[in-house]
Image (cartoon, rainbow, N blue to C red; front, side, top):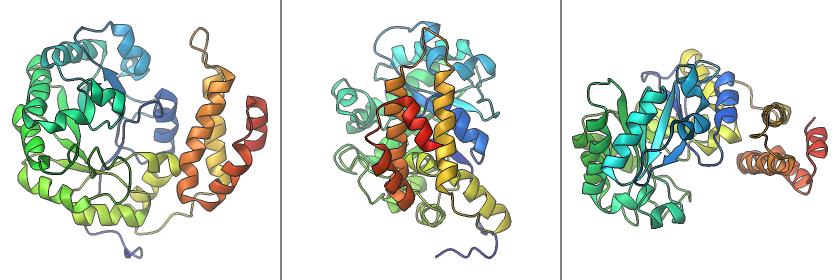
Length: 331
């Protein structure tokens, strides 16, 4: 157990919000960073195949590009690309920077079958040279721009055999830092996360490594840092489960004191605000009511994983299909 009576001796961690496809959109980023605790966020990925995408693709997925590449709370936003063609990745990185991106991340971690069938995400971890070429394509394209290029990896595809090789390849290609999800693609999101394996990678590279995976609580944060040796962490589903987790970690680091546990009504207020933001999106981008209901259930399903009251509320709310009924129930 951690000693919560005094601040942690280690340097204060920087905390990132992980990219989650179909989950962490501009509205989610705004809500979570407004609560506080996050030092940077990463967008959902822009899928790159073999063509230079129009500017509207980037600004639609990341509207923050038009306002200094920060959320409405002022938190820096990194734009993520996913693909395997070095030239196409480079050209689209240039396009993203022209649209206002100040940092680019490359996705080598997505475990989705559709993505991996088309040589994207974690599938590139099967050959360290593929990782090198993808990162190098972006680094070369942005040479002289002072735009940082990072990479988000897993520990491997089916095994951890190439974990060190892929991390070293990303570093050799010019990545400024790595974020390492402490599981293989095959392991998906099944616990446990192998934080001790992140330490092996960190010891082999000369650039910062951010540990990611299964950091659900203050105790998890302490264990992940201790076992990985990483200063910084990235939160994914846990930030949705407890929107105050990043702020909770920062508060403990500064004061040595624990914040009160997040109450159900606080979670419900976040869900309500999220729905209200979606309802105010003007046509033709306006989100249909049934989609908003689906997104609320998706978020609530994540909240239930580590909170008994959220689990009970999910059981009560999961059969509601009308938006006005859902909002009334949350309120």
